[in-house]
Image 1 (cartoon, helix red, strand yellow):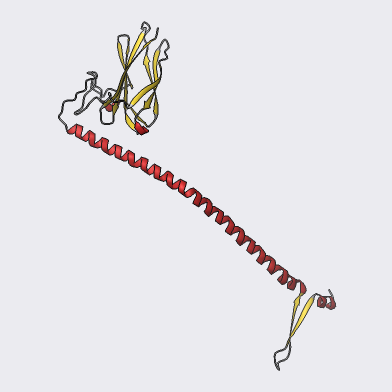
Image 2 (image 1 turned 120 degrees about the horizontal axis):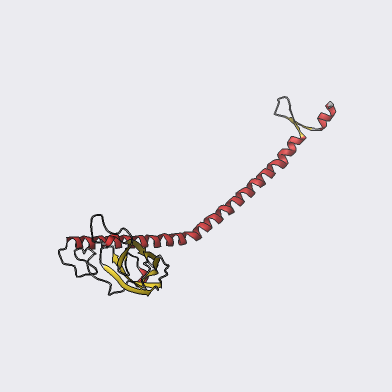
Length: 241
C-alpha cells in the first residue's frame, strides 16, 4: 500500500501547547469509527441487558411473593397436623402408662385367648370406626374377608391401633394376622395385631384356609387402640356353599 493511500485512511491532529513545538497525532479512520459507533452500541446493549435483567428478576420476585402465602399456609397446616399427632401420641403414652401402673381389674372379656392388661376397657359402644364395602369371596381352598375400615370420628381425627380377625370355619378357629401368638404363649397380646393408621379409610384383606365340607363361615373383627382398649367389635357371617 502506497504512502498516499495510508495517509488517506488516517486522520492527523496537531496539538499546540504555548510556546512548545507542535505535536502531531494520527489515528486510523476505522479505529475512530469503531470508537464513535462501537461504544454507543455496546452501551445500548448493556442498557438493554440491565433492563431485561431487572424485568426478569422482578417477575421472579413477584412469582415468589405470590407463592409465599400458599407455601406458608401449607407449612402451617403441616405443622398443625404434626402438633396434633404429637399431642395424640403424648396422650396415648400417658394413658398407657396409667394403665400399666393400675391394679384395676379390666372390665373387658372378649375371648380367653386374649391377655387383658390393667385398666383395659371396652370403648366399642361409641363408634369410632365402621366396616363398609364388605366382601367374602371364596374358592375351594380359601375364604377371604375384604372390607374398608372407615373412620367415623368428628373432623376425621387420626386413629391408630391394631386389627385382629378371628374366623370360625367349620370346627376350626383361624386368626389373622398369622403368627400373632407370642413364642411359648397361648394368649394373644393386643399390640400383635395388624397395625393401622387412618384419618379416612383403610382397606383390609384377610385370607383363611377353607375346608371342603363347610357351608357357612363367621368372622369376629376386633380392633384395639394403641393403648389396648377395644374400640370396635363386629361379627360377620356368610354362606360359602
